[in-house]
Length: 450
Image (cartoon, rainbow, N blue to C red):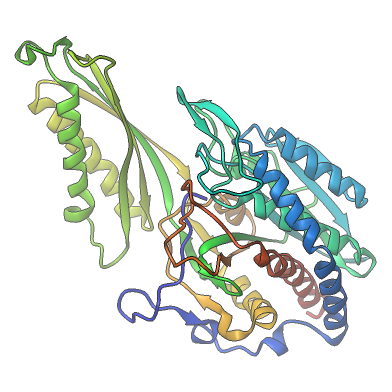
């Protein structure tokens, strides 16, 4: 995930964090489980507690051996071997390197999907850990480290743990569980397909047809023991764009004899920043426009012929998104023309907006409340990050939530995702494993009771 939301502290105007009771009055003891299910959950929790060391070891092994999107071969093999050892039906090579496991319960019921993403990021790790990543790769023409800087290694480990817990009680399960280990959440390499979008295209939500899907994201900025969630829009649409500026190459000592695409590009970057600040109704929805890279030239005394830049657009409203599209093209072409250059803009959607099904959210949040305690389940604002779980949630009702994992010695915002300093507290894993198991069993029990 490119960036995940975190709770905002106590500000009524800036963004209110509320316990679930402020969204809908519920009694978690009434909505979570029957007495039979409660006994089953208690037994499952004991199994989960016994897996703590294994889950941590899995995560550390994956962390030390990270793989970029569509190249998660080692991770996928580890997952597949574990699922097969549990007697779970396994299919590999799904969505290029994904793994899908099918666990059939002993009783009829719905099909519940649980998803974890597997890919790492082109980030060089700075955290001094015994299992620190030292993997390097060539990425977009540059040598860089590879690091699980967003917590996907923990997602894989927790879902492997949940699979072992649920397999231990398969005869008592009222339905089927589809375990989805998804590659390439951070986006595919240039020219390739990947991620949840490709898995949906290949029919992962079908055969058997999934009734609901649950997913979680570890959060380095959220305190241990907390869950955060939001009904409706959770994270933003993510569009990527590339701008190519064509100038006229010349000697760096005679700029008047050419057209400088670097200076033109700098002016374009500043012009683009006015789109959000001056054209967007930010009191209605947030929006972000960011330039992430600018490339031009290869020598100090040559003004190059061409410059390129790439960036991202994050929106929570389709009208605002379309306005940003239009204004980017207007700003870029107008500034380029004023400098005697020409420019091209290419924009494409990377991730759709993630929307939690409201009815499913209302039914399942009491499960998290019963597990963590009602004050520890917080309603949060929409985030400007993107999450390709959105494509699964477009096909079937989905519920995506966050599990707090901020180390106790760190302050909020000190170790953000997608940075070399990203860290999480592994003691959060037990709660994450149990959450996946409880949501699955309680949903099955609710369907059985209808």
